[in-house]
Length: 400
Image 1 (spheres, rainbow, N blue to C red):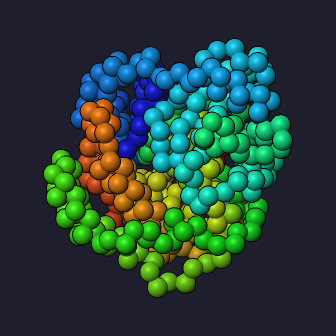
Image 2 (cartoon, one colour):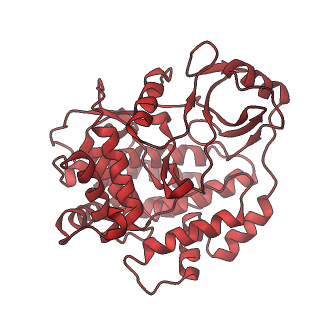
């Protein structure tokens, strides 16, 4: 489920809806802006666009303000200049930490905590990867090293990273237009042709980290009496099927990958360039796995339909940059399936531990949405077929 920022902007949501409209029209030419707005509201876990607007009104201006002393320490440790305003939260805490916005006399910066990044890293290899990607032509918020040269600094009990703030629009929402998925494919290929070595395949995308079966987890959750328990029980067959994707197939050699190329980590910058954020999970993956994970994230709509034009443009963009595609099959979706299963289990733990009315309400909405929008093995096969079997040249907008 998409998450609203701490200080949501209705203008940003309207822009997201217009971007979404272009992608929806690839498969439903008669869809209206109102239809796109309803689809976007659903992605945020709300029943209608009006409900989403009401939540925006309720939350506007509610960003948290950090201790000024913490802001000054961050600025001093990372050499950001003199703090000129409050450090404000950007979004609610995620599985890794929390993102903030900080302004100094040298500009605007994007600090964030990285307390629970998996696998645990000092950020050095990650920073070098981002720097190599930027040199190759990937648009991204540049990482900032501290005065000591470190990528991560521990301050007041948290591990911090800092990035330059890069002006852009809001995060994208799938499905998007073919011109954008073409840029996504091109960006992924730019990373893969670097061929930066990786010691192993990221465990998050290759190993089911929980030990309980899905039926056992559903029984435990039902015993807690939470509202989303029936949704989990109904999802057990799909979750169990996803667990079998790619099992027993040979694992191709990994390279260092972004490992999280999703619409939530992509924005359109000046001139419509694709800006890729969310580099903290960069790790080893077979290129085919990252490409198929991107197909699932970008070319499947919230109701499980496949955007054929978007899927095809994504692989066209990749092929144009890399020269060829890695061998692809439904087994190549193993990374997509495994990371999703680990995410579902992790979010279930978070939801069960939620305290306070606001967090419990969010947890219930998040779990219901997550469990009722799961892809299936059939979905993976359909998006792969769409990407590989369409005929004719790439759309002109995509080629541009």
